[in-house]
Structures are given as C-alpha cells and as structure tokens.
Image 1 (cartoon, chains in turn brown, orange):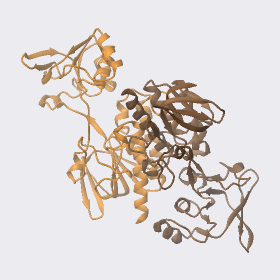
Image 2 (image 1 turned 135 degrees about the horizontal axis):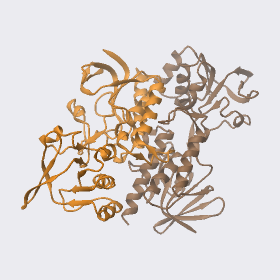
Image 3 (image 1 turned 60 degrees about the vertical axis):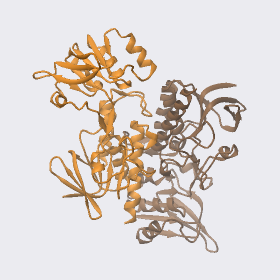
Image 4 (image 1 turned 180 degrees about the vertical axis):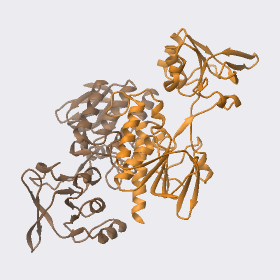
Length: 306
Length: 306
C-alpha cells in the first residue's frame, strides 16, 4: 500500500492547484482521478481565466496537469470507491482495487452537470450544446439560443443570453419557473425571451452542429425549434456520496460544509472546489483553484505541527 | 463627472479579475489605479500560478491588463484620494482632481510595504532607499547594501543582493531571524552577508543620496555604517485608511472584514484581494483574483435587483 503525505481526491482545478501548492511545500502528493481537468474539460473555451483571453478548456487543464507533473505529483488514473479511517490516517480504495494511505486528504471530487441523458447530447457538446452560460454565452452572440431548466441558473442564463441574442427560448418541463422573484420578473419583462412551459426535450438533431431541438408536450405531441445553441441548466450535483458515507457534513444542497481554512468536520480531511459550499457558492475554475491553494496551505500548517 | 456601473479601486490581480467578471456581465467598469499588476510587478518570478510553470510578475500582470482592456474596461491612471457617499451612490475623488461616480465600488487597494517612519526615509526613496529587492536590486550591483528586517522577505532580499553585491548587511531589531529553515541556512552560509542583530535604525543620512545608516543598540549606543542602498523589508500593511475614514470595519490587523460574498459593512462597497481578511488570510495572486471574481459576481447580483 502506497503512502503519501497528502492524498488528493479529484483532478480538476481544485485538486491540481492543491497539488501545486503542496508540492512547493515539499509534501509527497498522490492525486486520484480521471482525465485531469474536471469540468474544465466540458468548457469549449474559458474566457474568465485571468491572463488568458480565450483558452480551450482542455488546454488550460493540460497546462495545469503538466505543471503539477513536473513538480513531482503522482497521478493515479483511477476512481475513488471507498474511504476508510485507519488510526490517525485515511485509506482510500479505488475502483481498480488499489489502496493508498495518507494522514491528510483533500476531497476535491467536484460536481457534475446534470445531463438530459439523451443519446445525441454528448455528440453536440461544444457544437451547440453547453452547460454554462457564464462561460460560453459569448460564442452565441447574435444567434438564436435556448435554455433548458426552470430554476435560477436557467433564468440567469436566459437573461444573460437575452442581452446578446435576438431570441432566447426558455424551455421548462414544468408549468412554472421557480427561483428568485427578481429573476422571475426580469424574465417576464424581457421581450426576446420566449417561455415554453410544460415541454420535455426528447431529442437534438443537426449535421455537424446542433440545429434543432425536438420538444414534446403532454397531449399536444411534438414540436421542433431551430436553434444555434442550447444551454442545459438543469443543475449540478456535487459528488459527495462517499464523503457522507464516512460521516461528512453536508449543507442542504449536498455540498461539503467547509470552514475558512477548507477544513471539514472530519479530522484531516479538507475539501476544495465545486464540491464545497465555499467561495460564496460561486463555482468557477478560478475559485476552485483558489480553494485548492488554501486547502494545501492548511494541510501544510497541520503537517508542520507533527 | 463620469459614471460607471462599477468602480474598481486598485489594479492588482483582485481589481483586474473583478473587472474581467463584471465586464462579462455587461457592466460598465472604471478601474482607478497605478500601473496595473499590483504586487505582481514586484515579483521576479511567480511559480504558483496554475498553468504557468514560471512566469515573470510583470508578464502575468500585462496579460491580465490586456485582457481586461480588450473587454472594454476604462483604466484611469490615477490614485484614489477620497470616497464620499452621494445618495445611493459613491463618489470617488482622485489625486489628479477628477471625480467618478458609481453605485457600486470594489475596494481592492491591496497592501503596501511598511515604512520605518523616519523623517529621512521619504527623502531617500529611489536615492538609496527601496522596498523591493526583486524590483530594484540591479541598481545596486557592485555596491554596498543593507536589508532591514527579520523574516523571509528580508532573508530572500539579502540572499538576492548577496549574489550581486560585495557586502550586504542584514539588520534585525531582534536577536534571531524568523522564517523558513531553507533561508536561515542559506543566510548563514553566505560569507558576504553580515548579520547585525539587536539593532534599530534610527536615522538615515547623506547629501543627495543615502550614505549612512545610523544604528542604535540598547546599552551599547549608536554606530553608523556606510551603504549605497538600503532595502526595507519589514512587512506589508493593507491600504485601508480611506476605507476606515468612511466608517469601514477592519479586523485587528487592519484588513477589511468581508463576508463570504465579499461585502463589507458599507452598503454597495465590496472588497477583494490582499486588503481583505478573506481566503483564510492566505494572500496569493490566485486567492486575490478569486476574491475579485466573487466580488464582481456579488455586485452583479445586487445590480440586477435594481
């Protein structure tokens, strides 16, 4: 069983930045995760990373990964399956059946965008289908777009798009939008937001890029609308099941409750990135990275006390 | 008087990133500050910026500035002198005598190097007295220099100077240096660093340029040493005087008390970067940038409620 000073679970921006800082503190670091980059990999272009005008998600991810690799992190391409306490340390078991041990753990397993679950969905990612208006709206300036969802993120996405697009369809499977009254009012006021309630998206079509959304209403059958872009804003879910299993404390939206130093209620387990309720719940590559840095700094402070 | 949706005070990583996010929310943004980059400009190389293996401080600063400029921020090369409430808005007066108005302000004025507080100190700034070895060491190549301070920044400054100067005095008011063991060992090994403990600098003298440092030791009285350059490395203090003047709440170390959303106790004034007590007081380019993003997001949420 391999030992590390610090085990990082998750290889998105939070995990990678935590590794970067921990390595500069001379700790040995193992990072368990899939393809490094996390949600960055889903972002066609990232325009709000300071210093990079427009960077393709996987390029930024790759730069971060290479940097961390050069500093000496060990990447374990695998998935966390179980976390077990072992005296003063933690043992992490992976899907591939390996075990790793460390006194300190940074839990940075992120969130995932809820997907519609349509077969055509993956095909159009970056080619008309996006999951983050803040990140990708600008690519659809002057185009016809649609947003799926019925909550605050769907409404704010629609409002954001409505400022730069001639027409924005807001498609909700329920009758009513649910969220802050400010957003509700603004959505109503916006003349170029076309609200389509009681509709399910059942298919996406197009040649190279997304062209049509196929909708279905109960009793009324199918309709289709032509769009250039579709933002799927039906929510994100934090990957906190494992954390909860070992007694970890979550907030009402299943994010890990963290203190200012990124500590959790579990001894020597820190958390960082989209999985936490930190950074005022503003989940960005940048804030995830910053939380990773703070978590690593806190680990180092604890480590130095030994 | 020029109006903006948002006025950002300070053009370091926090201010620049706040601008980046606010511009992407389509707000009009004015940034008041000196040369963009803040403390990044003083950093020879930044090694813990995610995605950049080693980046020269001013290069990263320049990239951030260009990005923000392209997005349409208005840079006001000037210094904030006064902040005044004006009904539901704030008026900011600058050193050059201009006035700007905005409902929302992000206060990101960072920190500055502590001064000794000697009458002669200001007289010799740029004429023998400096506060940043990374920036100014080269002006003293081949000369006799001194560093005042007892921590990591004093030690690294002394080490940096020792490579290019025949003799470097390291003057500490305490008996022992305090900081990372790596630096302590290196300082001990360097033969041209002369360590002077238990001494206070009580005066600086010279005709046109700094020539002598007057030291005082308890019981032993005064001595003087001849130097060409003096680097004052006794720490950083937040630029919060203006904020305090208008009733802003500070913590015990004079940093601005911020909530998770970077709001302060003053209505519609948010704060970000080294000037705040956020990010677990871990002050990095990265955490400053993240705080800027969070502050801009909070401003946008308030702005949208109007």
